[in-house]
Image (cartoon, rainbow, N blue to C red; front, side):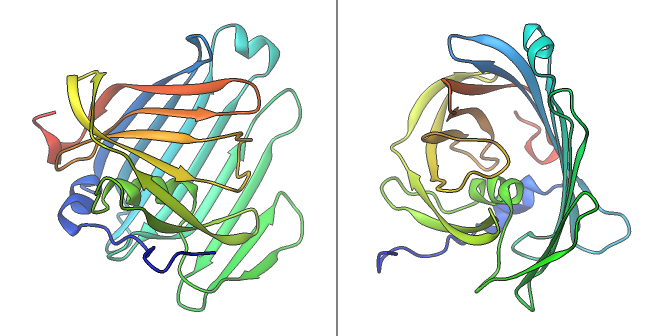
Length: 245
């Protein structure tokens, strides 16, 4: 049940504009429990030239090292967002995992009619009705960065996953100083409480450390999975709106 004090988060326009400056690039090294490096995560945002106020979030997960011998991974995710709240309208996934065939998924969001259309590979299209606007897993990650973060004050980010609209509660912890590629920085630890499986199996909390500044750079991400945990540390960052970084 949703508490009376819990409301949908509203992004701060100035921070959201910095994030969606049109040229943000993030590169993470991903490690498994104990510090074993298993892959890379690349995220970037660029302007969609053919549409006004539309942006493309491009994400790629790539394995390396011994992990590739057991379970090769090369996944690509492309989300198109638009409007003042940067809501998604198209989401395309290509997953190449294991040694089987590729999996392709296409999701189209009609935020005005509150409908979501979904197709996997060559299967039949499925249509879902939702009771309000929705983000997907990637656009929710980016919009969370722009929220009015106050320790001890949670908020909701509505996210479409597992065939339904999930009201994801996001907890905000007390500020922490953490080591990062920028040196030691003051951060907000935020914890989205994700009760859905989504694209990858999760088995516990996810914590994202965001810099306490106008860019809210996610310098570290930790997520518990079915076996152990994954930690993504930022190793390269570029954003013209955050040149001082």
